[in-house]
Amino acid sequence: MRNYGTAGFGPGQERRVLEEYVLRRRPRVVVVAFFAGNDLQDAERFKRFEQDASFRPSFAYGWQFKEVVARFDNLYVVSVARGIASLFAPSAPGREEPSEAHGYSGDDPAEPGATRAGFDRGLFTVPVAGRTLRFAFLPAYLNTLRFSRGELEAWPGWALTREAYRDMSREARAAGARFVVMFIPHKAQVYLPLLRASLPPAELARDLVATLRQPFQPLHPLDLEAMLENRLAMNGLMRDFCAQEGIEFLDLTEALQARVARGQNVYFPDDSHWNAAGHETASEALEARLRARENRP
Picture 1 (cartoon, helix red, strand yellow):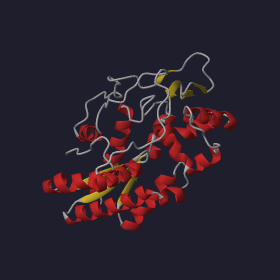
Picture 2 (cartoon, one colour):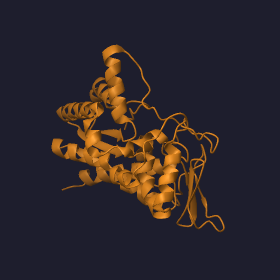
Picture 3 (cartoon, one colour):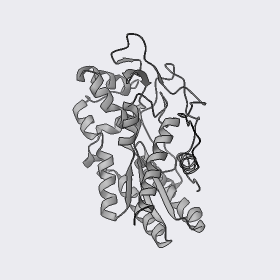
Picture 4 (cartoon, helix red, strand yellow):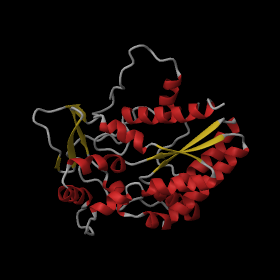
């Protein structure tokens, strides 16, 4: 098992990696991860780079809450590939939950009297299943929920992504490999149902506005119900595309939500990356999918 995932790569670069490095090793299975937070933007950026070697930031929305909780931008606990490898290995008796050796996970024992969700300078605090979860949203990714499925479908990055995935699927199959697209949601897609159930709508809308607002940058009125309706728009778009193309599709959103509902963060509190629990959740879901296919009569 080999992991060719590279931080910052979108569909265009992933196609290059597949063609130049992966297929020569004659893989049995090729798993490509699609990240809902910025892969469409990354596809557009790489296309511009190919055309004129220009480099432009992905987002206009930045991060304004560094002083609230510690940063974990450069701390990657484990890779999904390593997690899968460990699951295939014989399990040791008394296996415990993964530790957060590289940083604060954001889930703590329930605080006395902590019976209600709250929000303070970008940080949500929510009591869940006897624990207290703390987390913040990256404004750039949260902002994508303001776009409907039709608006996402019209982005140039979606056409580029479809083209890249069609090519990767065709090339993998020609090499005799099984091709799987694994959908990775961003944090807001996973945590918004919890917040919707924990806070009154007006209060939640106010908190999301505070999260999105940037200095000297006016914010259009926020439609909470539209954001909730758009939460899985990208999931549906990718799922339907894969079904149309005959590409195997695995959406991790429900598995990650289920772990959060048990009182465990799956992302670092102030970061867009999974913590150890998030990696383990993805590993288990992918292993189950791969084993199910291999065990068919």
